[in-house]
Image 1 (cartoon, rainbow, N blue to C red):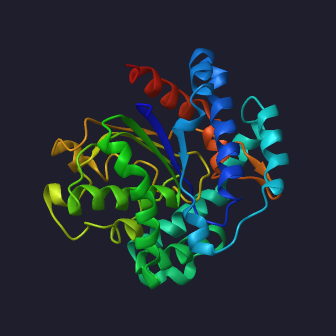
Image 2: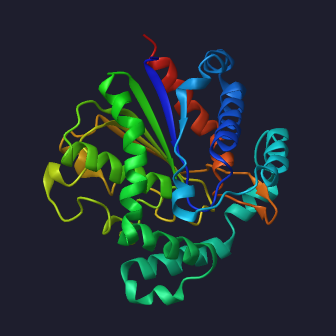
Length: 301
C-alpha cells in the first residue's frame, strides 16, 4: 500500500457516478498542479490510485447527476489561465456583500432564517437533514468516510483529506468521531477545506463535540489545517476559520492552521455563468494547487 493518499469529500447536491466524477476531479487537480509544479504533476500522474473519492451524495439524494453536463464547463475551465477582469468584478460585486450582510445577521439570530434567499437558503435547508440525522443519514455518511480512513490511518501513511463545502463539515464530524469516540490511532496530516461553511455559527453549533470543552470539543487527529475561500463564494461567507478554531492551536491539537482567503478567485463558469463555489474551480486554483504540491513534496519518503 502506498504511503500517501488524497481523499476528496465533495459538497452537496447530486453528483455524477462515483468513478466518472472521481476521474474528472482528479483531472482537474492534476491540471492545477501541472500549471505551477510540473515535476510534482509527473509524480501525481503515477499515483492515480492514491486519490480516493467519497460518494456520500448518492446516499443522501439517491440519484446521480449526468457527467456530460459537467464536461463542457470543465473543458472551458482548462482553456482559461485565470480569472478575467469581469470575473473579479462579479466576485466582488455588491450583491454578494448584501448576501453576506443578510447571512451574518441571520447567523447570529437564527429566528430570521426566513430572510435567506437563493443559494444560501438552499444550502441551509439541505444541511438541516444532515444535522438532524434524519433516518440516521448523517451516521451512514460518516461511516462511509470512516471505512475509507480507518485503514489509511492505521497504516501510518500520510493522508490529506480535501473537504469541499458540506464535505468539510462531514469530514470534521467524522474526524471528531474517529478520535474522540473510537480513539483510533493515527492522524490526518493535512485537512484542506475549500469553500467551507465551518466558520458559521449555524454550522458550529451543530458540529459533533460542540457541547464539550477543551480537547474533547475538537478532532484530535489533524496535524495541519489549511482553509481556502474564494471571493464571492456565498457558502464560505465567514471565510477566516483560524480565529474560530484558534483553541485547537492553543491546546496543541494542531501544528498549524492557515487561511487563504484574500484575492482568491474561483473562475469556474457553468450554465448560469460564474460560480465562485464550484469544486472544479477550487481544484485548478493556484493557491490550492500549491498547497497540494507542497504537501506531496514534503511527505516524500
